[in-house]
Length: 360
Image (cartoon, rainbow, N blue to C red; front, side, top):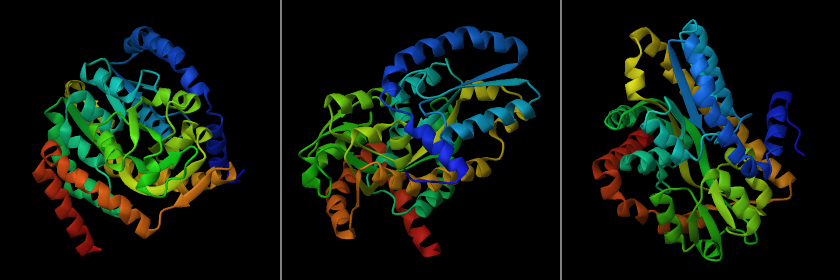
């Protein structure tokens, strides 16, 4: 087992406790959480002017959960108890698409998770743009485009659908994970059944690569790996560790084929109902929140990949030549989705990439 400093070791051991129970406990958690919404929230509302129910699939004892808990503490303190924040972690309220739909329907006030789920739940095709394979070439480039090129535009896009975009989050680089067959070429994926995120872009990516793929919600993935329903998935090191999915694979291929931001959004109707002073408290310092979230997740990547090795998983990083073979197949997916995500928006991102290169 890889030894880390005390804080990382504690977080790390928490990841390793997540086994097949993640899927088994899901139903019980859902029932208990729904009970909390309709009973505990009512009691909390008696003591606060406003209640924020925050839904997410992020597991506890992760940088994501730590950030949400920190936000809860700060908001409740700075509002002098006028706002009560209730955070429902680990998919306690369902899968990501289900949680995003609950936010849209007014059953929740806030959501933290992937852009993909919001795109599917609220018919916001523009958000699918961030799942296009090989859209970004580096983390620095992604940060530049998200913060300086498209943030305000996406605030407008989301507002039109009833959401307030507060921050970008961090999921990070998705890589290929598999049983039986190591993924080093697109042809290797033709031998495998892969779990796909619930997204048209992701399904199109798998089709282009020749893999059989099926959309499976997060709480059901471990069971699908154990039963042989799927042979693998693509996911970031942190989420692979936090969910225990690494226990169901033999190989982890560092492909960095999708950089996936997350987001934290509020229901516009709720956010706009807050007095201006409370709106400022809820948002806090956006730049600091985004920087903290990114750095916390990125700091875990390499230690977690090393732990995969220590657990007997074969880790392989694609060479530039091997990565080019994947790019040649996957970049045409951009063109296929041009009309869906918006040609002007895609061109704006391409222009942002050029700006970033010039300003480096």
